Image 1 (cartoon, rainbow, N blue to C red):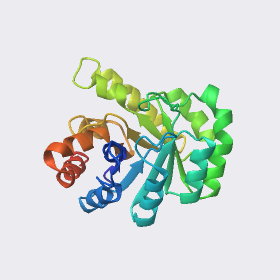
Image 2 (image 1 turned 45 degrees about the horizontal axis):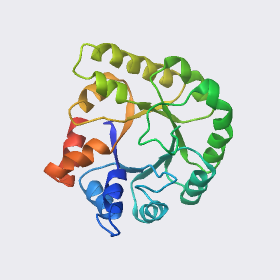
Image 3 (image 1 turned 30 degrees about the vertical axis):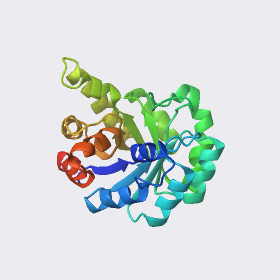
Image 4 (image 1 turned 90 degrees about the vertical axis):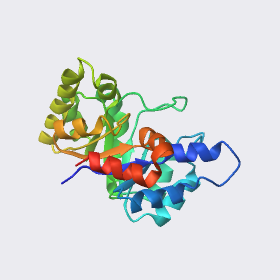
Length: 239
């Protein structure tokens, strides 16, 4: 099966929030992406609502017929939001409120105790749970022990290495992590700084990538090519 494309709409919301206006519309962007072939929609609400707002999450939940993936640090407010919406997938990310964007995965030695009851709560609601992880094969057994369904591989290091002498070695770390993850029954997602240029190499080299979540690069490309055409290009890059 081809790797699924979930479009992250945070940047659409960020642009809207620069003015006290209702456009560009997050729900209209979602419809455009879906009509162009996107398999899902991702949002990453943060406590200060600097881009995606709680109201956006509810509006999307009401209209989406494709997979809805909500990402974030599982604070009490975040968990309340997720539990009220019950998306198909929740991706837990260890970002602090002041971070501009996610920049590392979970540390199982430090974070497993906190995550275990959170994963259990989400699973009880039949929400698929994915953990945002660095490419570290040795961490996969601990992720599986928590009861998570998937990992999302943090791909900024790959994006930085793409086209350099370090690309093959960096890719190998993702290959090994994906292989070990699947040995422990975990499915594999990926996201962060994936572009239409580096995407194909990643999904054809790293085995079994079920889904990629892409926001910044896709929305930036859409400024030049239009949103629907850009979604189609990213889908084509996935094969």
